[in-house]
Image (cartoon, rainbow, N blue to C red; front, side):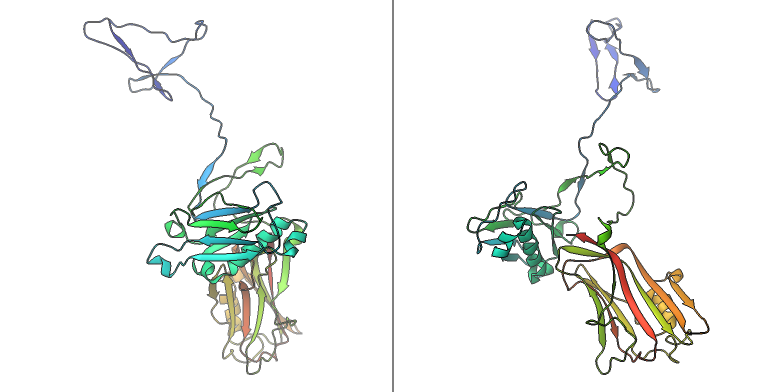
Length: 386
């Protein structure tokens, strides 16, 4: 007699198969002392299976970064004593894209010198990392190749990622990414390529039990400010002047709000403009008895990309254009004295102004607005560390 027993882990199948000349045999599966017997269940298609239960503990969830990335530690990931002497040089090199893409995505070489100021800083590694990252973000080839540098929060990790999605933002050849130092300064670069890496998922602490984590993300994810001090409300400024109801004369006047090289990214949630004038009407610009000849130009430069709003030449344009089509964000109040208009352009998710002054929101006044009582525009948002 020959009997074949098939066990398949997961859904465990159990069959007894006999040859034509052999009788069928019953089989019982139990533990060593036969105190617990495995149950057999019918799957409904004539197949029998062992009844099983399982508990799987997931230590980490991993996701695929859609953009190529690599990083470097000043010193190591754990220490804070990687800087050597003033005059040491840290050099980061990224290879160009494969031809013919090397013509638009060139190679990058950026050097930053260790200074006495870095060494005197209470956190010297991080102070240097911020400056090296700023040097990378300011390099023409780094910008042209669509790279972005940021410093990891609270320590000295310098993170470089491509702004391009998929393979054109990767460099997979050997030694295509490197950071080296001269003198006694130490740098640690875990990778010599820029690839789309698998990244573990971060959990938020449970508000009810900080020993547990929460993973409940659906749809778009928006960054939130870390502290109330990170909120800002700033006017578009022309030097020290915020009032835009002026006569620019022969040269247009430019009012702007810019990113700053201070270790923070500006996340702009809205731009709001408040206007006062007498006899504000549609079909003209506020109380001026005509539309504007040249109009007000609003321009946004974010992460190296520029967007220009259609010109604002009339009260109608404030309602239909500046609000990005959200009519509820336009409000006109007419009273016996001067009239008031409030308009808002909202951005969800926020517009990101990177950690440099080339990222900005700008308004250009091209016409004589001196007869308007007041026109002031403000930017509302929050800062996050790079």
